[in-house]
Image 1 (cartoon, rainbow over the protein chains, first blue to last red):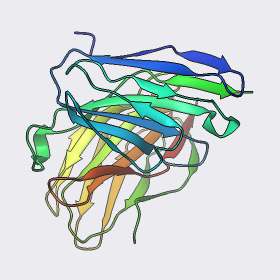
Image 2 (cartoon, each protein chain N blue to C red):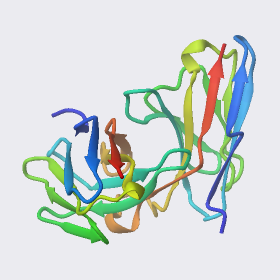
Image 3 (cartoon, rainbow over the protein chains, first blue to last red):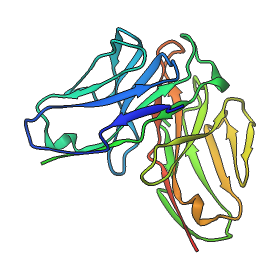
Length: 119
Length: 114
């Protein structure tokens, strides 16, 4: 069971370039998330999805786009990369089942992270 | 408290010492408090999910307590070992039950010295 697979692990971009971070999960989770981690800051939510075809903005969505064409995949697209997007990115999925919080049976499963530098 | 806050930011302890650190969160509209362990070059992994006031959870030498009335959780490590070195994150779902999002603290970076 692979869990959450995230690629690439490292990437260096030049200002203005674009790229897509891939995320796939094999746990049949409906909820998927993209976070970024900046030094000294908590994980900040970029975008999330509650199921195939449905996405919504998180706390810091500017400069990013997402799509969710299947339950398994949730790619994050960076358009016109800027130095402010230098960060560590994590994809996650949730064992969340349904609309309401289900407490003990819900937790986040994270991918291995992507360290992105924009120079 | 409006956000999820953790203290201290970092901590160095000797092997064999016991230690603890704090996660503070808004006590209103509380759903749950999660603890994750994040080792260097790996992804965060869930340690505990706590929901009830007075909850106490244990996993080996690591345990956690929860006080939802005052909005804090403690994570304890007994007899720290070098393999406990990691960043410990706490997170709390915030918002209405249908549209909640996880808010993370900044983490406590623990280094256990051999």
